[in-house]
Image (cartoon, rainbow, N blue to C red; front, top):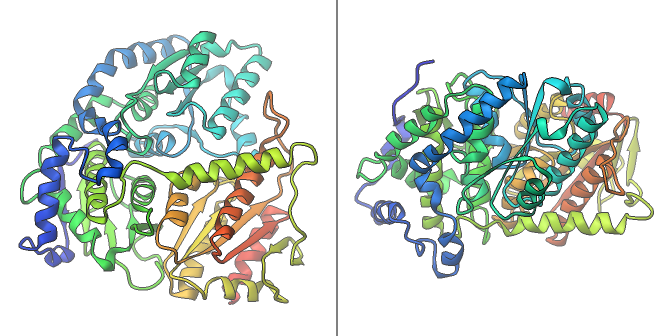
Length: 518
């Protein structure tokens, strides 16, 4: 496939850049310091974290050291006739491989969920032909650990040796690294001095990319070539960082439809929202299906095909390093730590607390405030119809976040609610699939500007799937993640509405009909 060389930016919005401004000078200076790995760029308090998070800058060169391991791994997979590649991961561990697969039109099964119905569909894959990549930087992420245990058990149940089907990508010395090596699994270590969301060009992105047949040397070559442009006064990274710091760009829409990099918007959403959304500051990307989709109000739109008021064009390898550079500069301008994610950790803690609380009696929640056909409503307010709850939910705050803890394949129709509510409310409206958004916009929701209104959508599963060596199954886990995050939002007195689908297909149809009628 043909690919763009470097990064080019175009569009009328570039005229808003003032190269004589103090901000542009600050970003130009910061870019030079970033190239030298100045750990003080984000303030003294962030320096300790930055000291062990800046090796992403070297990945276009250092990742070449992985090539022999990747060649050996892919040769082994071919020898074993493992033609189906499945990745279990969250956040950057799954989003980067997914956009690589879409860009190169390769088949990759991504499991970044704890929804039992979606997992059940994945388990229909012919295990004999499947290689499962388990990616976890910390080696202790509950979603990934649960999926690892599940697939190990399923391989054993199918009389297949898990050692012949599972590959682990993790940091050296992590709990997963130690246990996997002790058990004899193939392990590829990522650079521990690269944060998860900056890891696209590390082993987390390159291992699954190589296994699905992508020439990963092209990715890192393109990144290296693009990176050479970032230090000059006409740097595309400085231009985009400058614009994104402007007040009008606090909510910025991204559409990759029709571009050479399908799926890139979701990866950027995680990178920018999780990095900038803290200290009650941040930029919130709004991923839209096409350039004509409703955003909710008048907000800038970034495309990736050379059209529109602002467009960024480049190969996927170039985009990865470009947006990481832009995000690091954004955090300098906002004066926030680019590399921590305190509220992601909070969400994990809330989940753990609920799982402990439910250990004996199972999932518990208060009685619904309203039940109607296929839908239960949970709210601290009282109305007589679902319509009234929705009207109230979209009339209060600066942006609306819809969070659907459902099957993002079979239940995809529910995502239409984002554009519908954006039109009805004229308010910036985002949509995220739970629990994966907890590793993305979930940080922004709790750490960013305190102006969000939140709508959770949860659902019953037709059957549960047990998690090996745990007292709970995936249905309990996903409900603990939803309700745990709900408790974190309620502690902050944020408006929260939970819509629970007792029957998913009919419930989604009913919900969309109600929204259409508002």
